[in-house]
Image (cartoon, rainbow, N blue to C red; front, side, top):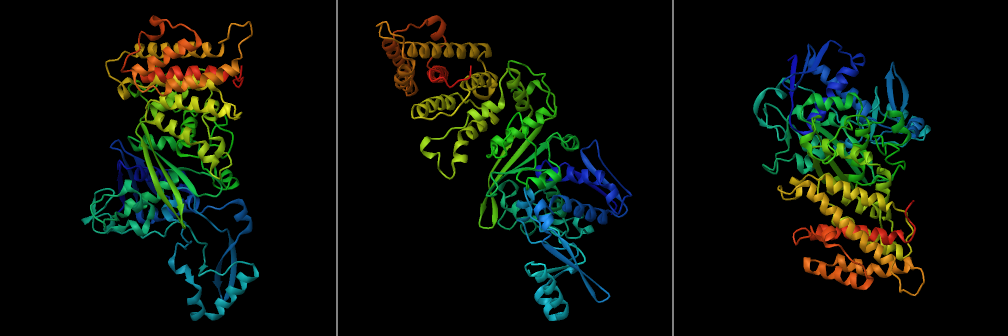
Length: 583
């Protein structure tokens, strides 16, 4: 066999593995022993590899990739060189140091950070077996390890350092020949398949890759196993904190192999180089733009890191600023390649990392446009994200305070990625922020930017996602503008209310008193209750409302959205009475 055609599988793991394999074959040709080969993508969306020594080539590039992606160690581990392998030649035993290694990111999920093993299985020997077969050699090895203050482990390595990538089952023609054994991932049938459970605990555990045909259908083709391990070279990952109890992994996908490959050749996703990774001890393997976040552990959850990735992608010119201003989330108005993304979150359990959340975003292009659109309106993403953090004052000292503080932001970003309305959540947020402020919370937030962001986002949400398709986008905008105007009238009337005794209004006292009326609006669950609440506000604070300007577009069907925008603006004005908004 001297020719291998790898198709586009429509599988995020396998297609990323294909693209990574191509990249290593092209980029590292000079480092491979077999340099006489060809590999290219075809018009038919396949990767074709041709070589007279095809199986040897596949094995060689596999371990080359493993050395870079799986055999990872920090600067400290490199300097300590806490491992030894031995070379026995002419009766003399020579010790060679090499670093202790750990796997991170997707490699951690795929291999579960297994003990290292040598490429040649004969070079890994149990110390107990060695004590029985060659006691003199075992004694020398134990002395060498003790002298260097290295713990004696169960395995001893000869002639080569261990590798953290799973030892490759040597490819055979039967692995590629049509047969009776079906691959769970790809559906193809081969004469010989491999056990997915033994080769990749992550792949057998994550529901996205299970066929559910039976409880024992964990068999996959050799090629699927091979590519799934290469996929780790194409993943982005971040740990929640240095303790590494939670990890988020992200994999891009595209409609064809060439578009997916283009992301990596230009490094548009901001993958960090190995020196930076070692310095940062592999906490995250992708760049976050300083204009987006300049604190290492500010982005801790799945969605805020995802937005950081997309922001970097947008900044690295995948998306341009040429967007339709009235609807930047409308994917029909963009002709860029259609990229999607899978995110996986896994938490530590005993000595394993168990996936417990998997999500997909089908089309990133409109979101990339929206990221650019928000900045084009003069808003600052970093300020918006910082301002979306909130925690109850009583939980500020909780050991999980950092995560709790970001949960609301995570919720809002999740809705944005699904292109769902956020006005109800933002109304609650503004009310809560004001309540916490009255309790002594002095956290700075850019409320004006949050208000503007909510308006721009809601105006950008395509009407077919969450509204009657017959509604006019301009009417939607007019209705929101009217609701904002209503909220402004309410807020100004509250803080400027006076007893007509010649004294200047006490805006702080008025704002504090006015909060209960805003809550009254929030509790209005029907159109009639909402109108009653407005009437009470008018009576209490003595202000008039122009029906034509502010309430003409209000109906029983849209009053909740109308109410939410009015609350956001009114509360924003009440908060401004406490002088926490930048001028």
